[in-house]
Length: 188
Image (cartoon, rainbow, N blue to C red; front, side, top):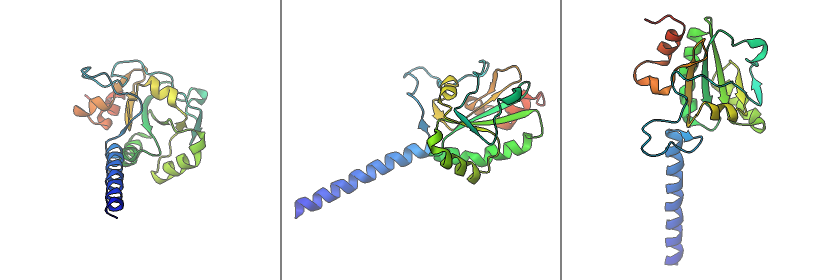
């Protein structure tokens, strides 16, 4: 009888450790790929000044931004997210507020998720729940790899010259809104 009680206690403790690990991962973001080498000092993501790769996805929800060169000459805000990512859900209201501020200017917002077509109902539900109305590409793993997305959520601002002008490393010196304004030539 004592053996069964100890076994139950062990299984309960193990379950709590696993649940705690999952909760920690959710709270602090899930890596999309292996982290950078120890001692590298920087994240692997696409850096400010680098040329942004082409944006590609298996399919699109809320429109296809690539059609008719709709992105040419615009500042582009790329938001990497996933349906299972709690930090992405927490960040969504800020991205929506930023979109509302800049939607009538020369700025295009694009969401990218590695979630595939099999999760299309969940993707649509997630977009509806977060009030995200701009184009979002699913099955965009090739683009996310090209952007060197090491974790999500992650955001990049691409200037009209096709170069990254703001990323999460920029947050320590300026907000996303300031980065977009600078890309538009509105900031000093």
